[in-house]
Length: 114
Image (cartoon, rainbow, N blue to C red; front, side, top):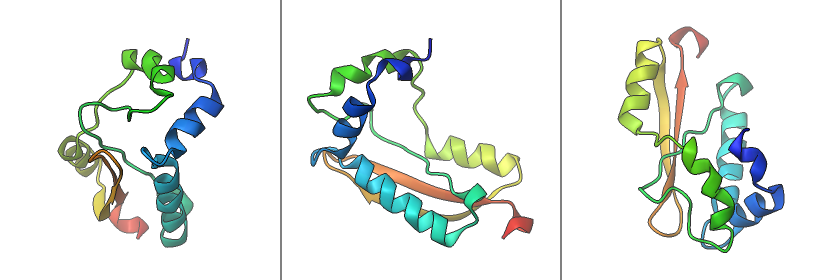
């Protein structure tokens, strides 16, 4: 079973929108910027965080089931993989979050699609 289905939507949204997490607000801003900057098919947020990948909150244990499928995304590995597939980095932005975490937005496009 997909572990994401074990997490109640209200727990997810409440956790992500807490002042101490602020990822819902940050992703909302990032997606709006991308929709107005690029064609919709090229708007993809890429997330990188430090070792504790779920921010501390009253909802943290709602995400325990995701440990079995979580894969840490590393910026350099993502960049190399997309470069091998013919994509170029168009832009990159860091969005600071509480607890010294951040969301990294990297926009990629194939040269002919720009």
